[in-house]
Amino acid sequence: DTIVDAPKAAEVKLVFPIPGKLEGIRNNTKPVMECRDVYFEYPGGKGLVIQGVTCKLNLASRVALVGANGAGKSTLLGLLCGELNPTEHEGKVGEVWQHHNLRLSFIAQHHMTSLGRWYESTPFTYLSYRFQNGWDEEAQRHLTVPADEEEARVRKEKAGLHGKYGKQVAKVVSRSKQKDKLVYEVQWEGLEDQKQNTFETLDKLRLLGCEGFASACNLRLAAVAGGFDVSPSRREIVKHLEKFGITEEMTCNRMIGSFSAGQKSKLAIACATWTKPHLLALDEPTNYLDQETVESLARALRNFRGGVMVVTHSRDFIEKVCTEEWHVEGGKVTPRKVLAAE
Image 1 (cartoon, helix red, strand yellow):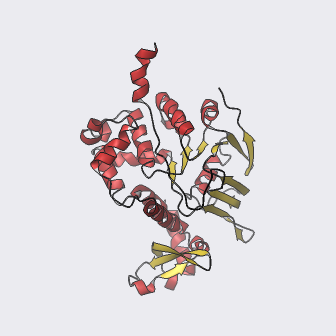
Image 2: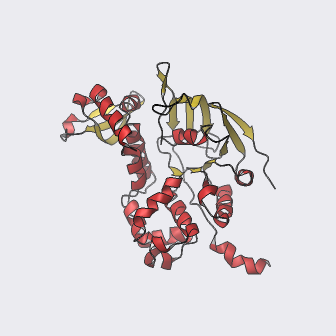
Image 3: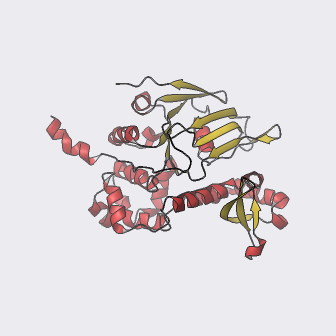
C-alpha cells in the first residue's frame, strides 16, 4: 500500500522556504508583531467588531483564530496583517506594531482571484512580473490602491484636512529614524519636486487613511534587507515552484488557466512565500483548497521555521497545525492552549 501511495504523496508535498534572521530577534519567543488596545469598526458599521484587543506573536507562534461567523476573526487577522487599520476610540488609536524588517505573507481568498488576470500566461511570466523588483507587486498594489470608491472618497476628504496643501499621498519613498521614532518620506500628488517631500510619522499617515503606504514601504525595505531586491532568474522560479509540486514543464510552458483548482492553489501559496516570509497568515485555507493540498499544507506549516496564524473552522486542521487558539467573541480575544491530535 505504502509503495502505491508514495509517488502521490511526493507530488503534493509542499516545502516552505526558511525565513532567515531578523535584526535584534535572537530567539523564537521574542515578539515580532503586537497589537495594543486595538478597536475596529467598519465604516458606517453597526458598532465595534474588535474592542480593546492586545496580543503578541513570535516566530514560534502557531495560532488559530476561532469563533462564530461574524465574530471578527478575519477582521483581527486583517488588522494584524496591516490590511485594515484600527479605528479611533475615545480619542486614541490603538497600535499594531510589526518588526520593521518583518516579511509577512497573507494568503487570502483574494489571492485565488488575483490569478484570474493571468490565465493566459505561464507561471514563469506571472512570477517574473509580480516579483520583478524582488518585492511583491500584488501586495504593494493591495496596500496602496483604495479598495473601493468609498475608501477613495475618505482619503480625499482626509487629505483636504491633513495633507500638504490639501494634497493626497502619492507615494512613501523612504523611511528613517528621527529621535528614536520611525518617520516616512512622503511624496505628495502634484508636487513632483523632491524638495516638497515631507517626513511624516505613522500617526500622521493614519490621519490621512494612508498607513498602507507605510506598510508597503516597510515591505520593500524588508525585501532589500533580505537581499531580495533583484528580479528572479528562471532557475530560481523553477526551483521554488518545484517545492510546491509544480514541474518545470508546467512553470515554463503551461497556461495558468489550464491548471486544476489544486494546482492553482499551490501556485498561489508558492507566490505568497516567494519572499521567504517570517510570518504566514491564512484566512480559511480549507475553504478554497482541495483536501489533498490541505493535508500537505498542514504538514508544511508544522515544519515551517516561522510563525503561523490562521482563521479556520476546521478542528482537524487546528489540531494538526496549531498550539494556541485565540477565541474571538464579543469583540474580545481569549487565548487557549490546543491539545494537538497525535
